[in-house]
Image (cartoon, rainbow, N blue to C red; front, side, top):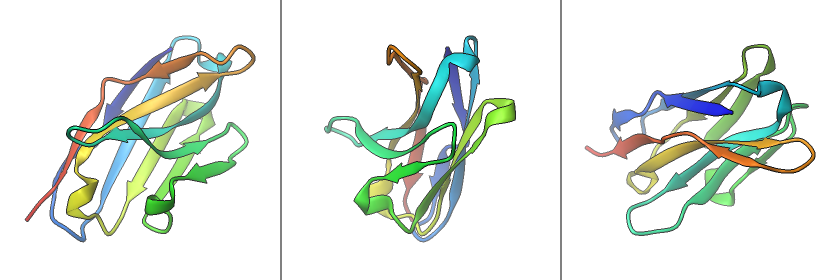
Length: 116
């Protein structure tokens, strides 16, 4: 499974961005997809995940501001980020997990910078 993110960039505080991730390769093996992020000097942390059936999980700090969605027909997952804060500045990684034996796959990451 290969994952490619897009949509990162520079945005002012209070603004919005939409990240996209497209999967290729053994896509029929994918169950959950999602987003993680890594802030400077910290470990990678959960942002949100979504199953193939649409069940979502969010990190508490993102609830109400971030929305994850998925297009199963086109093997895509999205992250709509609203009311962005400077502390949301991070590299955002797309993630996928397979059915059965739960292998993890990661995208290369996309930088999101929230700054005035």
